[in-house]
Amino acid sequence: MLASRLKTWLSSPRFPAVAVLIACVLSLPTLRIRLVADDLWHRAMTQHDTRWNPTASNPLSLFTFASGAPDESARLLESGFAPWWMPPGLRIALFRPLASLTHALDYTLWPTTPWVMHAQSIAWYALVIWLASRLYRRWLGAFSPLAAGIATLFYAIDHTHGLPVGWIANRNTLIVSTFALGALLLHDTGARRERPGVFPFAAAASLGLALSAGESAVATFAYLGAHALFLDDRPRAARLKSLAPAAAIAVMWVVVYRAGNFGARGSGVYTDPTRDPLGFLGGLGAHVPLLLGAELGAPMPDSYPFATSAGKVVLVALAVAVLVWASRVVVRMFRAEDARVRRTSRFFACASVLAVVPSSATFPSSRLLFLSGFGLVALLAMTCAGALEKAPWAANATGRTARVVRAYAAWTWLGHLVLAPFLFLFGSYSIVILDGIIRDLATGIPADGSAVDKRVVLVNAPDTSFAYYFIITHLEEGRAPPERMLMMTGNLRDVRVSRTGERTFVVHEEGGFYRTGTELLFRGLKPPMPAGSTVALSDVTITVTHAMDDGVPDEASFVFANDLESSYLFRQWKGKAIVPFELPAIGETVTFPGRTPDLF
Image: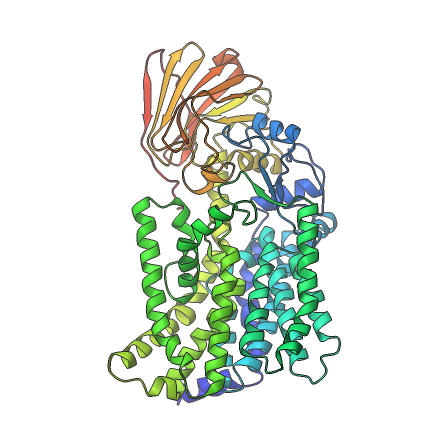
């Protein structure tokens, strides 16, 4: 009886409205989240506050984190906001003017009222779920209204959606998804008409808005192409003609992107496929299965960039195992007697796999799965509905295959119905957890005004990207932190700090100064930084004294120009805090075992 009512409820035409309401209610706790991390960066850029922002300010270019300009690079190094190994010309400039505009309005109209900003993000998310429900009912509802309802429910509470909903700075993902799904709905509407009329042009316009909100909108082309291959019944010429406006938008976007010199250069976290195609292709082997697997039942990939080599192998192996498991089910859909099931499953599978490829241009993260996850969730819903309704492709399975189908359906219900809401909430607050770690650590950085003219030297940073956040955390609370920092190295691996002279230290980190995670944000593994490379700050000269075989330095000398006691404040990361570092005597060495920050 309960199962029958559940089927009726999920199959109801009114269920999409319920799903939107569920998504909004699940998102309501985010209204309490304050401005954190990149939110503060965006507000500083919008308000042209040079205390917080060492980069050139432009309210429509809030996602330009490093322009590559020599004077700006020098400011980033001198302030310590970027680690000393940042290469000249580092550029991380993402083309997201529409997303930037929404933030500029936030920080102009209600700069100190975060809940209003979160309410806007929730509104975008409600639009995403509504559009997804329309597409699911159109493409799945034709043969299984139950599958359409399950897909809508799963997508509304998806475990990978929490962070983009809860973090204001990640709103671009919601805007991209809104206009990308809108483009698909408009395109499909035109394809169903004898005369498409303005729909192909309206779809192209929506696609253009998606591309102006974020690079992840490129995934939309995967769905448009798969739609032409599997769902569009018109002659080939008509299909190509309807795609022409979208192709024109793609060309325009590429021209603007290149003319504005957008993209990434020099970073090990962001890879520009057009400038470094080999580096991009080299990451696909791990990133694609990790991202696909995260939606289909494998562990989320967010820890992959920070894992050891063995840990990375385990994560990829688990993802591949889940993909093999899921593929055994999906292949049965490909061979279903019902042509609608065959075509629809092939459409979603092809589009999802192709859509995840652009996301591999950065380190794998569950928040990248909004668009590829849209198709993967449809396949999961078809699995669950097929098992419940005893669809021929599922009911006709025998022996081990039948057990595989039933087991995977059960695993899907567990992950996407039972666990998903909790993981959604955790994801939406994960940035708050990180912010709490940063704020607790920042208490060890003097901010009473006594050290404004001194440089804080952190000998073993918990994360070399934290320097900026330490400073803005204090500035946000009205304090007066030092204007300059220097992080000698991170401490993910064993570190040795030796004092070799009155004002000279030699620092060694096992495995290299930048090797994993955010260590690579400001510099990739290539080009090498060989022994003899020098970085000269106003009061410190850093020289690489040894590099590993691949060119990553693992030892460097730090020569301070001024008196150590009066011009610098030395700090160390110890336990869960940053505390004063007692300078060793000349000839002595201090060691720090490798570790990661405690989350709780």
